[in-house]
Length: 322
Image: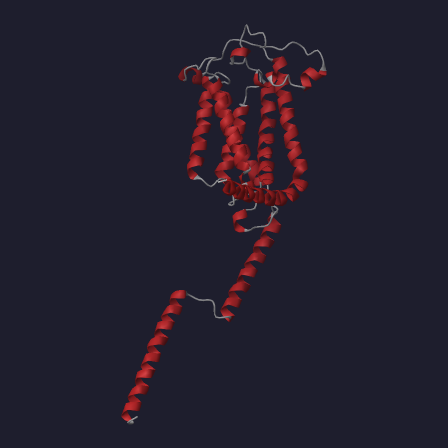
């Protein structure tokens, strides 16, 4: 048993080191874009923290989702967060599966570069939207009477820059339209829908996105409009940004390491086609090309022809008395 575990661990380690060797050149080339995307996550958090100072509590707005869905209550509001955490870490682990599994379709560096581009574009629109109009927050800590519904002026710059982490991240108010949780959820689901391989998981991920939407409304963390706007905005943003980015190479087809521009891609496809034609031509010259069925027919015909020749020769010999 110990030897089996050691042997399997050695195989996994070889896969990890081989994948690191393949990913490092991409990281050296794309690190600035990845770093910028990660920095913008902090900027997004800083913007959400800033709008909390502007938030003014008030009566809940009339909302169709609040009428249709029963309120979870403060004791069960964690359900929406648990669902989001499950979606987030499931997607995160899936993006690193090329380091473990033999079958792989993409490079982890390239897919996170793409995901961060989707997130940044959506978050820019979100910041513009929630700073344009501040709605009274529906969450429990944002309602009238809550001591943290409106933040007092900060005592120093660090109080703003540090975001009062982690309490300030979980207990924000004012950053409503549109839902940040739905931005991450829809970006992850759409990415897996395009690059994932399991149809059942694709269907399950869309179902989880719908459940996440309903739980957010039922937990009164957002108005229905925040979720509805996220659904069509994020999908349109992903569609547009994805069409502008160079397509990622499909590793299952042995394509080049780096994504290609349209001109480079056309040139590569042309070279590949010419190479394939040359291989077919050499097979023709060497007699290794053709329909296997046709070859079998020829073999059978040749066999019958040889039998006929032998039979004719035997008859001639008999007639001559030999």
